[in-house]
Image 1 (spheres, rainbow, N blue to C red):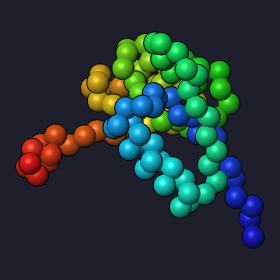
Image 2: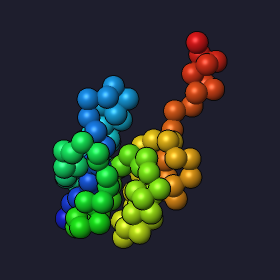
Image 3: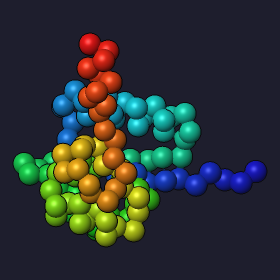
Image 4: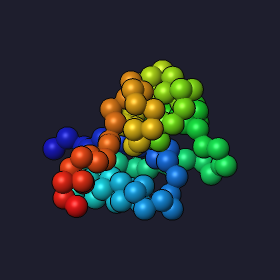
Amino acid sequence: MKPRTIKRIGLAFPLGIAFMERLLQGILDYAREHGGWVFTRMPERLNPSIDWLAHWQGDGAFAVITTAADAKIARSLRMPVVNLTAHLGETGAPTVMVDHEAIGRLA
């Protein structure tokens, strides 16, 4: 049997926001189900940026990309980055978005 490869996943988004907490729970549920992921959290700062990912030796990341500078960093990384906000529109990274139209229909 082939040994499972451990994937190092960066979490570059703030906690304490209900939406982000639910996204984190989904990420953790997926990781538990599929196994093989270890996580590194974003350093705590007042104005968070994903710039630390450029110097981190990981396999992928989930991030909040809210500035053009962070979008540029995300595109330059040698790992996949999933954007967790639609704040900028087009970032060049796959983006998880809220379907506001579907929410309106449900309401």
